[in-house]
Image 1 (cartoon, rainbow, N blue to C red):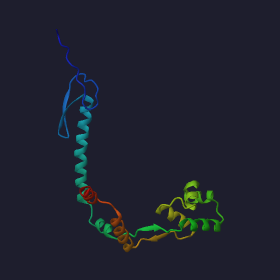
Image 2: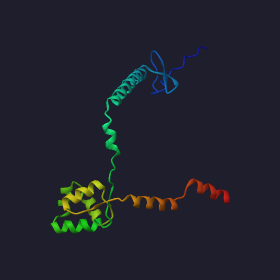
Image 3: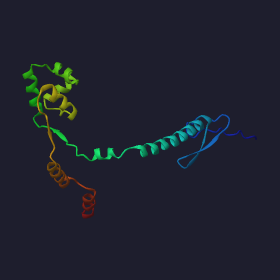
Image 4: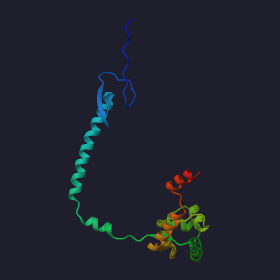
Length: 171
């Protein structure tokens, strides 16, 4: 009995290998691949080398002035609690409909309706647009002390992995 040679399949794409099979090392694993995958792999490896060279060159050329800009403290803002009342009153005072306001701030009418009902809190970006369109103040700066107090309270209420491990030991 004659044995038929087994067909080789590409270990990357799964197609039968017609013609020459190639051995490629990908992430430390030696794979048998077809000619198409072999060519793609060669292109990727050469583009990675070029990208790494460009990264090194770009890192060398960057001035140190950019680092100083990052060190500046950014003031964080949060939306006030009674935002929905302020928005609705200001809109009605200006005589705008929800449709007109939605076109002015480039937001869906349904989103603004939900915001006015208090069911949706606007993002910082949308709050800034609403402030500008309605002439009201919706954002207030976050004070650092508030953050620390909130994090302390949250950490007291949160369950940690250590707490769970101790609970299981006690039982």
